[in-house]
Image (cartoon, rainbow over the protein chains, first blue to last red):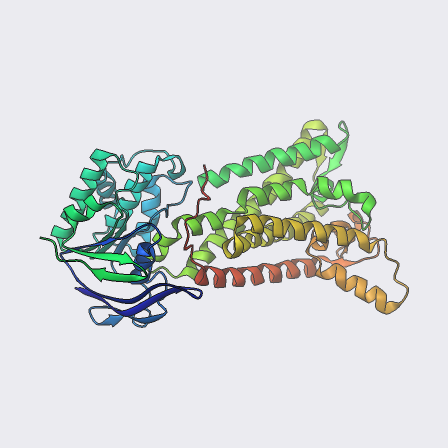
Length: 214
Length: 270
């Protein structure tokens, strides 16, 4: 599987967020995106996933063009910084609602995903009563539960304690080993140095490749 | 759903309280009279009826407070994870709107039912023939009104933020009530003026929930509603509110397809 962006430009109104974005990414690898807060990492993920339209240029997945051949990337697991779930439902109920949309998995896979991120699938607490760390873990669970081919993780270790960071990093490595194409955006350099095969810097409205990491 | 279903209980308490405060106990009251209380029967086109108008509006405003950001919260908090799964946004919105209508209908029914229970508790309630048709029109009109304004708050919140959603719609409702009461103070001098006043009354959403300005050819309804000359037709009110609801649904479908929360949204239920 190959995901490419060619001369993509992302705008909000008249403001250019990112321009001349050129990317080529393959499955079975982890791509890291670093940049300061507000540099455009989250917007890049929204654009690559299809959640927002790019102003110009093209995003392709195995030759198919986003917004022409498909509305959003198929088989995608994504977390976006500070996006949540339905506040009044439990974590399990939320994931069940989401799983119903594509009908790829059942309750056992949902429970497995919740357990993998270190939470209790039988917890009756509604999402609105979760701690920040629990909220982060459950949204990671919703991203991985359907074993998607593409994973986009925006600040995946935000709000996690030391053990949580270790667990989630291990989980991301397992997803790479499974063959997923993984994109991580993080302002935490350690996330990137430990995980990424290739690193891009998001700065001054551009996305530039750093030298390849081993 | 469970979390939002509990607000129906508050609707029941409100209905019970409204009748408790207004009813002289110890006598028999017809069920249709209880339903008419919730249908703003005491409200006329006059500012002297302002207390009645705002008192019987309490159950309606509470519903709007409880459910006014129901869809907006879902859209702003979890929308990304639904829409990234290639769900049709219009289908998602219509499903949420349908749930909101079910809550509107249930709330209207529970409020009136608890009012009847309050009347039975204080005195006794007789079930007259007119109760059925009054209840049907009450449920149809009030569920549609609640649905339309509450959906309007949600849609306006998606478009412009939840602060504006509430204040915009609440302000519009206050203005509608004030304009309704003004109608009684304006004396039409010519037929065309009278026609204009009637048109203004008909396009005012508040008019359609005030049963005191309605009339019907149905003999049972005629016997319990004293027409005061405005003669707004019940079926026309249902149709007007259906049209209003459809317009808001269409605007909502467009809004969820075009809007994205691009900045962090901190409005979650705490």
